[in-house]
Image (tube, rainbow, N blue to C red; front, side, top):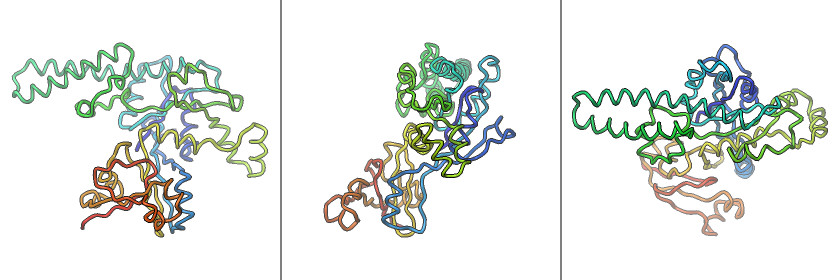
Amino acid sequence: MKVGIAGFSTSGKSTVFQWLTGAKPDPSKREHGQLGIAKVIDERLTWLSSQFKPKKTTPTTLEMLDTPGLSPTERRDNPRRLGILRDANGLVIVLSGYAGGDLVKELLAFREEMLFADLEIVTNRIEKLQDSLKKPRPAKQKELEQTELTLLTRVREVLELGKGAATLGLKEDEEKVIRSFQLLTLKPEFVLVNIGDDGIGKALPAELVALSPHAYAAPTKLELELEELTPEDRQAFMADLGMTGSSRDKALHTIFYAMGRIVFFTVGEDECRSWAVTKGSNAQESAGEIHTDLSRGFVRGEVVGYEDFKRVGSMKEAKTNGVYRLESKTYIVKDGDIMHILAST
């Protein structure tokens, strides 16, 4: 899954990118987007590995895309910069919480930029469809174009009201019609407030939380600097600042779930691994994340929930206590399921 890191040029996006991925920003790549990989650490996977003692433990990851910051004044180039985010599955919007600015105003201004960028794409497509429908066309093609035009007209109306396309609550078949436009206001978003050390322990403004209930604050620059210290000095500085530890792993965990993802686990002596799937995926779709052959030849899934497994302590006890289940391909996978897929060859 690719997550775009976005914000205004003063927000500290690239610092956030380095904090999340460990990759240093490369100015030569920023104009077209720089990719980095962030490991999503899960305490459940750590515990499972302590039980199975595998040769390898593999956490799930997020692909993070650092993009050029938007200009709050010279807006002409902003649509192009936002365009780099269109192939991302979700967005992390970074706000500059260390500069003493108005966080609510900054978030609303960034969302407005996304609205304008989407409105431009939708309007251009509507005009092309209107022209096309005036020309002789096969009946089936005209029907498809009219369906698309009607849907995009609804989208334009809501964008013109200053609301994102996601507020329409489009059905799956409707989203499929306009998926190729990769509208920014349809993507899940997560707001990360990039604070300084003076913001540690302070609550975010209530109005910001109302706009983005999962908004998260982190002193990213400070935490990067602390990583360069010896463990003893780091602990001393953190104690002085009232910090109990790095907030990076928690932030990544929160971003992951804000993107509409969950994990299931596979376990064994060779490897314990967490696999990311879209919330609502069934067992057959989830098997495809491991290997396409498992999806094609899916016979059944052997499933036990993480909490049940931890309570009983072993697969043998899971079977004895009736928490080890056989599930069909239509079973909707739950976050934390431990699964073994049986498939025909």
